[in-house]
Length: 367
Image (cartoon, rainbow, N blue to C red):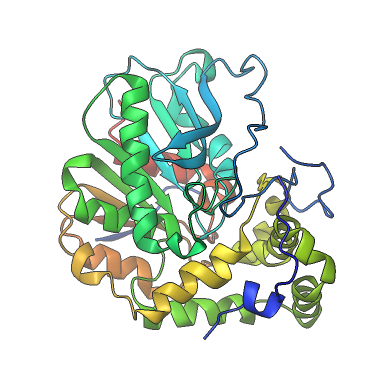
């Protein structure tokens, strides 16, 4: 699905207008324009009537654990989702919330396969739910006719509630779910849990997003600081590229291909190409969420401090966010645990999978 935004300037479109432990050991076209972990040219639209020509689910669901995959209508929103695992499990389902804002969920799928049980996809013992919230990954900006101003942190929190309701209805169940959030998705998960405690069983926050506007400013500065001069020049070229007006999804993916590897530890950056990001909605990252949070001088700490659910925080010392952020979440949430995985950055589930898996299994009470 392509986006045509003729007559708009990129400067307005893409820029801002206006108790700690150390872990155990460690569709669209196929023209991607580059090979940095990107696999398709799909994107999101902004209120364009639904054509009905959505990517087909994985033919026959080659992975027998996959129960649903593709565009689903969730409270009027065209949302890209995947549900896999066991419908009969007595353990709470697990909902994964993505980094970003703007990333699709695909990078979560392989690193979370260990939660399906000893037989993998052939013997799943948990229901796993992945979803691209509005204006992220391959989901739309909102219901048909909705304005892009509906893309805010608060609407992402609302999207989580709607996804949980949708998945519970799909599975024919009621009750809370476990949430695992990464980066921005961890911030969404934390605030959602504070506002909807009955909907959450256990909470895992992986390199959570800065909880206030001052730390967000340092986070954004660090993103630019990690880029070399050639990287910065390439980013400027991508964002000023005239063809970007006719293919915003492609520009987003090319931007992320340059910037994304720097979110990992230097020794791990070669792993980025295999992470499978198929979409990155750059407007959500650079214009809507980032600017909206800054405009309202956000501070999540008062809400986060009300969380009383079992909470595990996982941090990588190479993360983009200030190193004080994970400890702030730990100190604010009574009884929470902070685990630091040495030699990892923003994506420890890929950079050092074994300790990440051990921590998550303990956090979610796996037998």
